[in-house]
Image 1 (cartoon, rainbow, N blue to C red):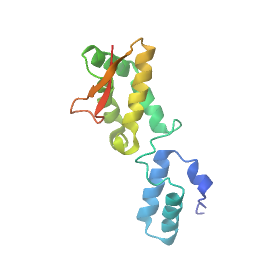
Image 2 (image 1 turned 90 degrees about the horizontal axis):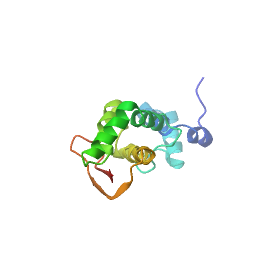
Image 3 (image 1 turned 45 degrees about the vertical axis):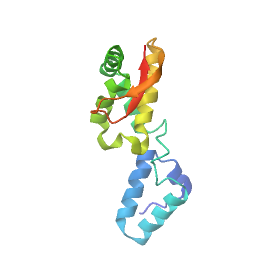
Length: 147
């Protein structure tokens, strides 16, 4: 039995599930798929470039888990001790885990930066008042310096 998609049903999906649904419907090449693509476009859920991920999105939980793991915490602190943005320490960890789901296209780099800021404040660090570029091996381009 086919699922009857409504605006309300689409709105409750996580951003990654909405994106997957959109891509699947788009590639389906049927009147039903085309109708679903139009529904998603109408409610504004097809373009995740500027909306980021929700706090209930599985990507958010995974980024949080990586950053707050012992390895993630150490990576953030070590980067800060080296004079780099703390995000420079965890960005490669998040990128290796999330692969194509980490980047500017869905603002997960911003999410990671926000979660790193929370961690650093919890650890007693304070913002140095400036940001700096991240190394070339990072997906994110800049991050806050902590002291």
